[in-house]
Length: 416
Image (cartoon, rainbow, N blue to C red; front, side, top):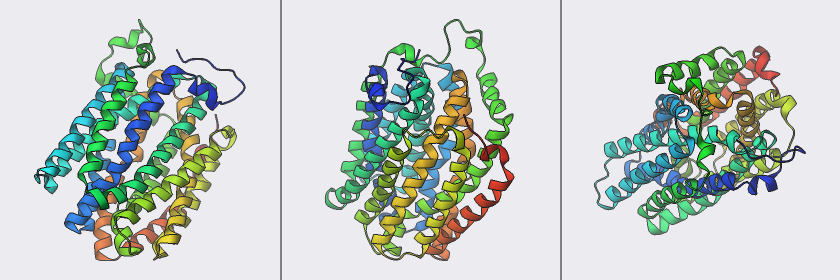
């Protein structure tokens, strides 16, 4: 049962008084502090050792593929097992894999093929964490505080990214790559311990004695697919998401070479650009966290995506660091303002016992084209230019979203 809170509206103070939510939040805060540094270290490692935009894109694709292939199955497990325990196990597994990357790098045994395998394994484990942590929230907090909880998660994730990205590039330049990778592995183990302090009952996916408790894995998997497929709203959201995420991924997959080649920086620049994006999401999360956006979630999505496409066009034309930093901050603000309401919408519309399956099916569909986009952007950036790939992506996002605004009436008018 979710812990109750006054029905006067979302409240950060009541959230932080909720013991189980606090442990979940702090555990996520700890693990994400390492993730942010690892994000910088991973793609920078590939870029400086290969100088190939194609291999950078391939690495980013390896990061994204598990979200497409593994997350639907992870969602089924999140609806069949104790979600708290699944979060703990996935954190431990990620800690072990990341430690393996660090050890192999120090021993000079980390060639590109080995790295790709480990990246696939690491982000496959992450899908179980994401499915379970997203699905457990409505069991821990009251309905009126779900929006505030998502806003707080977004805010602290962005704060971690801001610090991790800012320091990550500097740390790599001063101490090398082994230190941030090792730190990331330790944060996973610390997070696992904190999540163990959550009351075990909050992790239960189904009520005790539920007749569905003995249902087969295949049946549960099909139910998740069926739930999403039968909703016109979700189908429209999936289609728009596939289009938008394809071109957005094309931009972020080549951010490391963009930092060095296009705006003439280095590892610190890569970190600062990523941090600027995170700073923007912090601002956006603060702005949207306590806003009553129920009546216009759909319109907020469309106009936000169109605006972000316009900024991507500017990014492809910018050739210096200061305006690039400002542009990345603006993109971060817009995406936070869009993503927090959408996540809240999903959590309030989908039955609690279906959140894991439906959520990961939707997530897999939204990210299905991202690995392809990452590889293509790396290849095309090498053939043409980094700026051309980014500018064309921005134009495509704006045009496609503007057209779909008039076509997708259900998504445009959705509320909760």
